[in-house]
Figure 1 (tube, rainbow, N blue to C red):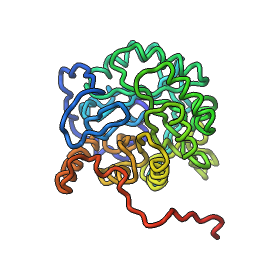
Figure 2: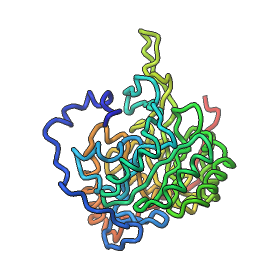
Figure 3: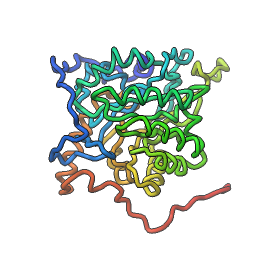
Length: 351
């Protein structure tokens, strides 16, 4: 992936060798939102039927073409490309990625070709992957979100949109709609009036309490909430007295945030009636299953793409084995099955 090359330098052995060739002809787009089947890995997220619970996370997958040298993007239950804004964005100053213990910081800045070019050049290819297609949108104003959603509503093959109201790497727009419940509800409600497909609201963890934000998205008409986006952080080269990111601060992702993300998913899943799509440090099938047990209906795979681009294939194989070993009729049977004997204990002011 064009933005990821600095972050994969330490993982070159994983990427050596000739990558598998994508099928010469990618299947035509299918209306998978209503397709029926009997696969035990199928999950339903709002009105959408996903063939499996693994979704590509926005910002780590390009628009699918970047992954074709490693696997067929159609293996995912759904694909979500990089965020799209109404006008093109150049992104943040270099460097944009810094490796951290058990994770990575990014400060990409939502670089993207803009809505018109996305629709004409990138969307047609994404539609041919033959899986649920979710378009991630970001805007500086409510009107920008509404404009893009309304235009996508008339384009065949777009099953859902994901509203990015959680990016920590831009000075305006996006996250400002995701840190105050009334702003979240107002945005989702306006978009709901103009888009007939499924709507995901992607939430930020950089708030005091994520539950009221999720409830506001639900009240506005969201079909699902995606959480969590990255945690704000920074990395410093003390010898040079300089930050390691051109944007100074960035978003932390990877295994380091998994315990924090699990807690957020568990809290939101208990409070909301709409499905939760969990993410944050998922590298293996065990990670996937932890999120499902915590209450997520599906999960998004993100930073794993930079370390092991074909990780999703291992996860799918392992999940099929778990379903058989546990004698489950469907992977959905374990969603929200966490057993607790008491309310969560929150320690404040300790030490």
